[in-house]
Length: 255
Image 1: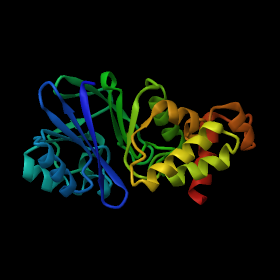
Image 2: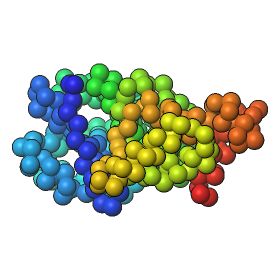
Image 3: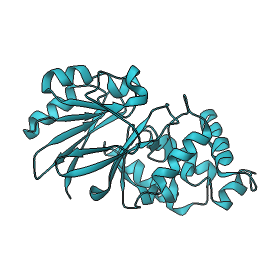
Image 4: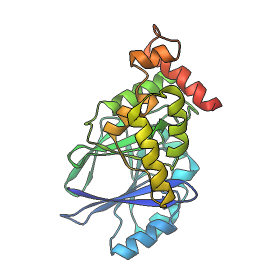
């Protein structure tokens, strides 16, 4: 694998991710919920930090950025559309831009919905996608700013990636997300298996992220809004995919 991945628990239920190019030693971080755990991990591994990629402006994803920049001198990358709400950026990004970690090339996607200007960072050769609060393990982020149609379009971009992509999302929400998923597809055997796997992981104190996109496609209701049997189960057999997604998201908000 061209990139080494380290998942770092932060705050109460956030995750940050270190990615390191083994050939060059260049290391990047995706999101900074807090600086302390990241600095501890870097010190334990003897790594430097070169770049910080920010997905969106919410405080629990950026609040450690200034302290980490002061400690490491890392460059900061984030959305041009969100620059006014982010820490000072070394480079402002838009969909279609590219970033690098050593010899590995990453693509920038606009995955607005949870917020406007939310980015995802996709490294195809490494089969990694950093999706933060857009596509999440077993769910998706609440729609604070974007419309259901906007979020459905964003999720559809991510669903089109290689099924072997690891989805590196921003929170440990999987247990609650799958509990809701079971209300949408109670007969989904893959979902039932995943619920047991997640329960075992959490009982052992292990993260349930990242997750394979193939598993999300099989069990995450928000990626399955286009399926005829899912539409029918919601009483929306003839509705558009985005309308079904909107109903599903509204139910999750009340769940």
